[in-house]
Image (tube, rainbow, N blue to C red; front, side):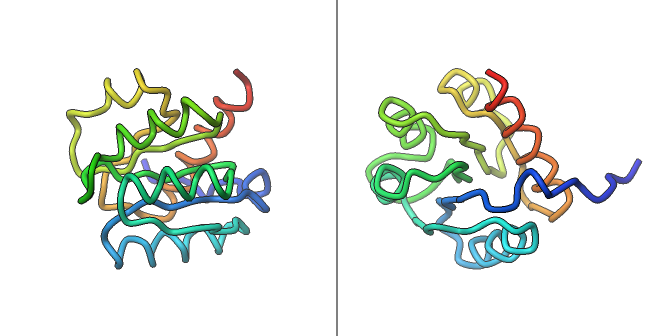
Length: 134
């Protein structure tokens, strides 16, 4: 069954940080976020850069890749961010084997690549609803 167009009114105006080392994916995410009225407040390409930008910008939502170059991966970056700042983090990955770790850390969503617009917006909406309700 195909997913229907998501309700994006609750997403409009939300501030989003994307942490992703693939330039094409960063561009794709930016276009999707903009189409839903969200504001991309930063783009990081490594875990350490993502932590620094998250703590500086204090976004409502973080889209975090798991496997990236640098001192530590997206799971460790998410853990470090959530230790200092409560925000809604969704993990982006091509791998299914990190889901349990992501939940353990406190991520609110887990999205498998490749990413399409409808799936991404639905998952952001679901994660944000879960985050805001508890």
